[in-house]
Image: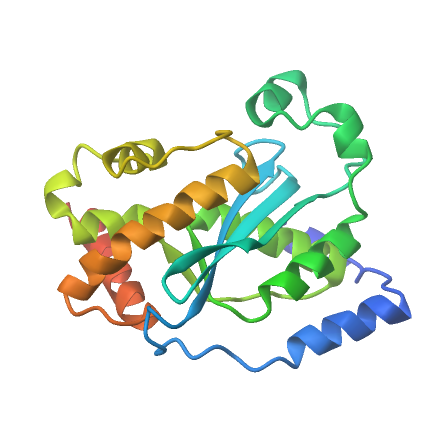
Length: 234
């Protein structure tokens, strides 16, 4: 969204219940990022979209599952499809499997995003290549809820090479890391399935982090930042 489009952008017209839900979410306390990793709740996220251009493409689906007290909480998961005014093209549908009928039958975007925020609470987020997921969600939240949604994110695409530097050059994709730890993905490119695989990768990372005395989310964020700096330097 360029400067002119931001200037002309009108806030969405939310109804009274939607405004109440949004205000209730905003009023939630911020998370303690210093809480021990084996006690905290993290929400692991993956998204599906109409393409890979974060400036133009639209959010289609969000899948998420929680890691609570060092375990994947299968009962604590979330999946939603946002209703699309214009269905994505055939090649895109072949990637994620969300067909035209499913896209048209999705929840209204404001409702879908409020449901996601209700599920998330104020828990810190985790993803693989998090910039894409974060940008797609932030753009959709701003467009449909009128909210600038800045949340803490952790990117395992940088954390894993930092924890296992001898694998950094040979392991680039999520599939590389999940194969290393024997993690299976029941439906690759399904948002929920990819979130679940990423959550299991996070579990694999926790004992590696503990061995390096990285005991909380803030410490992992610092490790991610250092790995990003190394990538830029070399």
